Image (cartoon, rainbow, N blue to C red; front, side, top):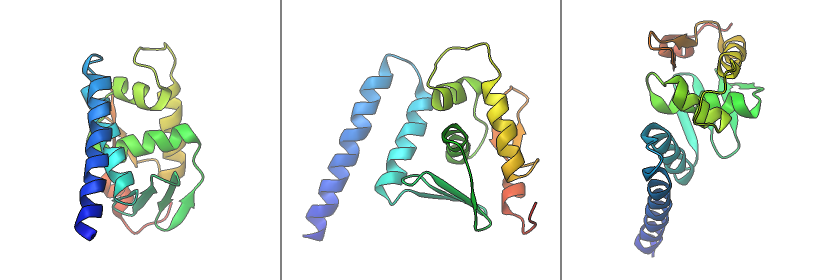
Length: 148
């Protein structure tokens, strides 16, 4: 019975991922596709993502740093989730798509504003700007024992 349940869950997961692939195939947004797939996999596995001392509950949309719950607005959580899933640099275009729901440059600094708010909550060095203009989480800043 457990095997049947596992196979059913795997089939559902594959179906959801297949639907995403079809949706993004024509858009050419492979990084946004990868982030959505990661979100689905996390949700199917319990929805918990851990990076150093940072914990994200994808289902409840709650974040904790060093055990302390962060008060994040929905777009701040979406930004943090995208950065945590990436494990490296995330382009500004990808963040616009994931956080703002737009695949075009809006001409605003909305992402920079949300990054600034995240830095205020996580610590100034927690989110780094890349040379290419994107952002990434600083594993050292979210893993150490100090409290900001």
